[in-house]
Image (cartoon, rainbow, N blue to C red; front, side, top):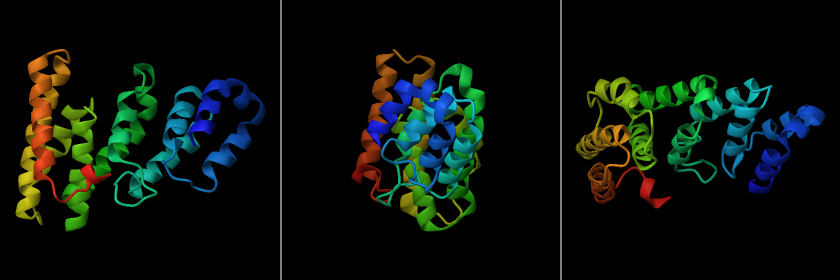
Length: 207
């Protein structure tokens, strides 16, 4: 929870030195999921701790289990996941790379490989979360995910939403190159407003 997260960040060096096993036991068992600032605590421990592998593996398991897919009350929102990735310090990017890759692979699976209407909606939900959070890895998503989608099993509504999301990614990629440019900010915001009006299937706006 937020109190435990604040306590960990404030006293982490001393806690890790004196009771590292207690941290592992409390945070990993039982599985409390990513909500209620658990993912924030995990991110901090991975960035600053020495025994990071159990936290990386648990975070990846959350992604694979769909714990950032929205819908269920115990799930965390997709936007939170990508905001966390945005805030990783440059020196720690490599450490988080397995988690980032797991997220990208999961979105590709939902959009391309699952072929169920529900999973496609979840994949679209993730993409909207990326746009809303101004995800810094937008260029990778465009080349590794968006460019490989051919609408197998998509409804007309899903296709229309995907096209608008694709437009949003083009606007986001332009903005990330010149973040202070007001017109580029406005371009992205306009697409997000259009997505809000268009989207009746992902549940992103009803969180």
